[in-house]
Image (cartoon, rainbow, N blue to C red):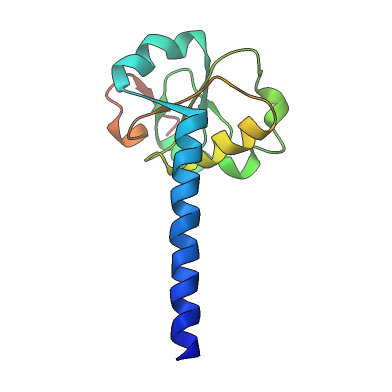
Length: 127
């Protein structure tokens, strides 16, 4: 019976944490439709937070690849006085990248709704 209570408490904690992170990310990160994203990304820093193999398979024209796994060590490559447009495959990694950037003082953070898989604009691949 104690194990059941422990599992229920842990499940409740995970759900609570997930809900808090969802609302926190919504507060610090603006989700843009494809049209809004296209209208502004050329005047911003466009960052693809996917891994290099995903980036090489296809990415938005003009995007720089700074994988989520490297964002802390490469943060100096991103200016905090300009808008930052982030995208990943589906939208999950951009939230985590935005949290890291926000903690370091970045304010104008935007993400592509649905991620790269929903992108219908110009694409470049290295393969």
